[in-house]
Every structure is written in C-alpha cells, then in structure tokens.
Amino acid sequence: MRLLLTLLLPLAFISAASAQEAQPKWEDWLAGVRQEALSKGIKPGILDETLTGLQPLERIVKADQNQAEFVETLETYLAKRVSQLRIDNGRKAMAEHGELLRQVADRYGVQPEYIVAIWGMETNYGKFFPKEDAIQALATLAYDPRRSGYFRKQLFAAFEILNMGFISPAEMKSSWAGAMGQPQFMPDSYLESAQDFDGDGHRDIWNNYGDIFASIANYLKKFNWKGEEPWGQEVSLPEGFTAKLATVGTFDESDWRPMRIHSRALPLAEWDRLGVRDVSGAELMKSDRKATLVQPDGETGRAFLTHTNYRAILRYNPANYYAIAVSRLADLVKQ
Ligand SMILES: [Ca+2]
Image (cartoon, rainbow, N blue to C red; front, side, top):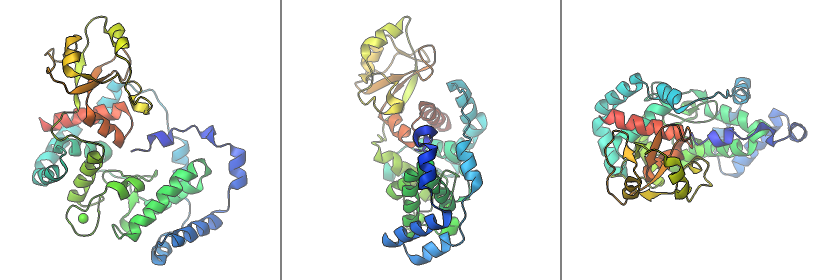
C-alpha cells in the first residue's frame, strides 16, 4: 500500500552505469547504515540484534524486478478482490469483532465496515500476512540502487519503531516490499498512524485486533474521513452523456495521479439535474454534498460518483480499482 507509485517508477530512471559506480560492498554499506543509525540515537542493542550477520535476500530483489504487468479490468479486479468468500468472511469478522469495532469507530469516527474492508483487502482479515523479516527486506531494497533513497528512509523508520519499543525485532514482519502487519503499513506510515488502542505500550499491528483496527481507522481519519458519510455510489448515465461531461471539467487536484480521471466535484443535486441516476435507477439525493464522477475503464465502463471518503481510501492505495473494491466490500459486509 502507498507503495504502488514508487514501485511503478521506470527502472530506467537510474542508469545501470551510474548505479554500478556508486555501489559499495554489502558489508561496507551495512556498516554505514549502522553508523548513521547510531548517530540518530538508535540503541546499539537493537542494531546488534537486527544487523549482525544480516544478508541481502536475493529473492526479494528478484520479486521486485519481476513484477508482472498484466491487463486488468475493473470486472476482473473485483471478481478476484471482492469474491463471495471474502464478503462472507467480512460479515463473520463484523460479527466476531463487533464490540471492539464499535469502540474503535466511536473513538476515530470511521464506520466499522470500512475498517473491515481494508483489513480484508490487505491481508484477508489477517488470515494471510507476509512474514519476511522487515529489517532484512528493507535493507535489501535499500542496498539495491534502483530505489535506495525511498527504502533507506523506510529502513530508518523501521529502526525508529524498534527504538520506541512498539514491537520486537522478531515480531516485526513485512512483505518483501516492507509493508508490515495486518494493515500492511510501510514504516513511515506506521510511525505516523499506528495506534496502541489497548494501551499496553505496543502498537501491535501484527497480533492485536484493537491496535490493528484503530491504526486503519486513524490512517483514514488523518485524510479527512467523514464518519457520517458514504463513499459514493455506482451510477448510470443518460444517453449522450460523454459530451455533457466534457463541459464539467476535471477534478481540481488532478495532479494527484488517481484523481486525474475524475470529473470536477459537483453537488449531487446537480448530477441529478444532469440526468445521472443511481445504478438501481433511483434518483440521486437532492443534496449539496459534492461528488466527482469516475469511469475507471473509460466512457463505456461502469460509472461512480465519489465523495471525500473515497479519496481517503485512495490514500491507502492510490488506485481507483482498489478504492472501488474497498468501497464495494464495505457496502456488502455491512448488509
Ligand atoms: Ca497495544
């Protein structure tokens, strides 16, 4: 999560030649990391425990280099990510953790179904989460010259997490790309958003349900989540709408990649006046709540009106498919 943009940077961005020249030996590089960590106040014991004998993980670099690019449509994405099994398990999770979710929802102002939907999308409600050693994964990617700046920053954020005693080195597991625990936070997002909901001094997003739910909720809250609002709705468009839509214009903050394909925000009442209907055929609310229109697969694909909360979900993972899947899953687990 929040990593997609970085991972999709063209590899040619750093030329092989300049990378070769600058690349120190692993042991020398690691000694430099250790020195810098000490100067930043990381306890020597933590560095002894995590860096002694550490080796780069070749399969992590391979996984990073071999990210498959394949053509996906919203339909194929939703079929995989919002499967009936995932919906059923989400409903079970809502029932099983109902009281705790309600407490978290009250404190952070985020509806439980969205917390559960993100949890379900990231790690299948914690049933599967990657268990690489976070320091090893991050050090490997920080040593690899292609995106060393980004991952070196994440590596030092990870040391800071250990330094604060939020989790032990042995428990700090991540994906090969450094996304940690059941909500899949990168270390910098963890430092900004992870919560100690049960007050035991640990921000345990690997094992503790309260900490996991509160951390997801807190992340959304930081991006202006509105607890009383829906994400949006799927809509149907009237005949010949594309020409009309062209006069509406694009979203004000369209320099943000996933929002480039969104229309300018108009009040729902205005969309209704333009002939847009809920996908069920019902009229839209005659409300002044603003919504942007998005058709992720282009003008012949499905259409959605989205509000502020949708953009908070995009902050979790800047892809419209992702935000629509989370939104849809949230609606379905709530039913
Ligand atoms: Ca805790």
